[in-house]
Image (cartoon, rainbow, N blue to C red):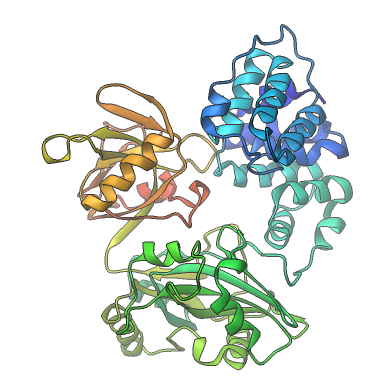
Length: 509
């Protein structure tokens, strides 16, 4: 398959707002791909090379200059091999060797292919929101149920592997995926609830748990071997020895647990989220100890529990995790549920999560089986630009341009700006971080690659013709940056519009 076919499909997908048209174009390309290049094709289209980071920095890639080829001639397999060679290049002189390899690749690419490669390698092509569209395309191309594809993706953790299995062996191959201790699963997520009472009414039999201001972790243990992963499936085992030691001491031989970890003050209150996240990169376990709180058990001593109701998974969790189970109340009265909320907020946490006790573990979508209740509205938005400050903030990048995720794979949709809630320390960090990912700038505005997620607190949203999505944030304030989240996990424009008063629906986009 020619690389130009991938580039052309990517362009056609970006040019339409129709999800059906996107799925149709992607499925057609996947059907025409040979088995040996399916993984590479999927990786390119979701904006993440199979090799991950190849060792060439943003400036190196942007500065590559070589005349483009007149006609398409590059094969997908050749591009994949070239990127693999760049990725494994190391040692003395490796930086120049990577440049030479990339120049050779770019020299064989047309102008459109060069542009695609630049955006692919700098992260600008990556539309994590396209993941959902790609899952539908895989299901269509392989003629298998979408739920079968999504479950296999949850278990494999990798979209290219899921696509290869679907196209090579259909539903039977996908159903062969099993939970594997030591291989991370995509985590189940919670949807926001309007209120505690509404969540209780909708879910019926439930558990109400503290919602911690921590970092999501997934731990796997087989015998003495322990692995710890983040919510994005990045392994952090070597940087959290205290968690490894704790899990190794649990009363079991094998286990997979889902939970949160956070750093605590001497008084037992949560430290700022940034301190917990910085601990993931600490070199000395004595720098800042992490405390885990587990809320789900997906495997215990040889038995997979994914398809068991939460009520049974919680029984297994209490058996193995003991005092490390997250605080909460099962089958609470309304008064008890309200007391859990009050206790969580009093302890310095965010609120509660209400979970159906009949629910199985399902990842990939924010379903309604888990619902989070917070006292204020918060959104996870993507920083797409920023303005230089004035007055006391002169010289710092200050006023942030905020985008909501397009669920159909387009670029983030701008919904507002804010400079409120930024401390001097955060302003300094933000200025350096955003300048490092700038794509263009003038005397006032700096546009950046959409890769940083930021949590925003707001009073609500209102209809507004000022922004493309038809809505604008009201009294938005910065809570914190979310380095643990990928742009694919940001709040969608549909979720932002859902906050509009019912009597004033958002206009059609």
